[in-house]
Structures are given as C-alpha cells and as structure tokens.
Image (cartoon, rainbow, N blue to C red; front, side, top):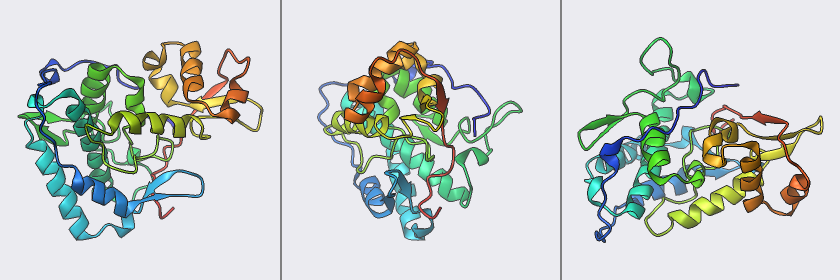
Length: 260
C-alpha cells in the first residue's frame, strides 16, 4: 500500500526555534512510559505492536491527560534535549490516541480526516494546540523535528502506527536517553527486513522511508547505502558488500495492532 501523497519537505516553522540551554527543568513523561510498558508488544517477527483492544477507558483517560499536560508545557523555555524528547513523545502519543479513537481500522491511512480534496489520512488534521498554535502530525514531523534537528535518526523516533515504521521505543524519550534510544532504534530497523532485505527475486529492497526522505539520508542512493552501513550488523554488511545501488523500496502500511 502506498500513501496517497508524496512526503512533505522539511519546512521550518520558525516559531519553534527558541530554547533555553540553561534550563535544567525536566518534563514528566512517566504516564507515557507506563502506557508503553503496558501495551507495547514485540512479536516473533521483531515488530513492536500496540495491544489496542486491551487499552482500558482508564488508560485512555490517563493518555489524554498526559497529552493535555504536554500541550500546556511552555516548551520554548526548555533546553534542546528536553524539547526533542517532548516532540517525539507527543507525536507518538498523538498517533496512538488517534488510532484508539477510530479503532478498529486496518491502517492509519484509513483515518481520512485531513481537510481538503487533495489530502488523505490524518496527517494534516489539527490534532493538538501548543503555545497557542494548532498543530498537525505533519507539522510536528516536517516543520519542527526534521528542520530543527536535521538528523536522520529522527525517523527512528517517530512511529506512525504502521508495521513498516521503525518500532515504537520501549520507553518514553527523555532529555537523558533520547540520543541512545535513537541509535538503538536505527540499529534495530536497518537490520530488520522492514529496513533492508534481499527479496525472493534477489533484489535489494529497502524501506520506502529512505526514498520519501532521501534528502535526510545523504540525498542520494549512495547516501542511503552509507547510512545503512553505519548501523549494519554482519548480515546486512554482507548484503551491502560491493553494492552501489538499490533495486526497490517498500513499506507496509498495515496497522501495528497486536491483535492482527
């Protein structure tokens, strides 16, 4: 299944640039951490899924309060490390709440609530208000995270509710653990068949993420291959040996539902 639109460019929203490197304050992500511990399930295929059917009304209420609490945080007054963890957790929590609101669905792309005739899915729907600004999921990913941090590892921290995406992290991001979790997420994903594999025809196929966001991965197939090599284990290193091109791209848009 392919998305109905091309991936948005990284388009900086300058309002979100300010930060205070001297602010030692912490943002409490314990509620999101607890939710993940209760409902994130790793399948035999290594894919992290959410047991959506097992989410109680109490869990939903706590998730909603967590999101409301994040929305009220004066995030522009925090240090960069705290801001990064904040935006990653907010994005992931919003995706989970969105799926729960429309569950059961086969794919998050079926939640077709974005405004306009030429949009699809939930990506352009105003889903939260922070600092007086209404934000969409696209705003968080493509107007805040990607253009401010300009780090390809960002893609391993955001989970869009699909099987094909990098796994939802096993714990909430914090100012202290985000850098390590993103590297761990990259290593898991690139060495998983979702990230890179040899298919039944002998073609070297990688995640469509690397095609959609090629500009974030060196802006060329050579850049993508170099990125994969940076985090490759022995099996992937063998696949990459002497390789100078990619044969195809693929992505599974199925919902990351533990019940499926």
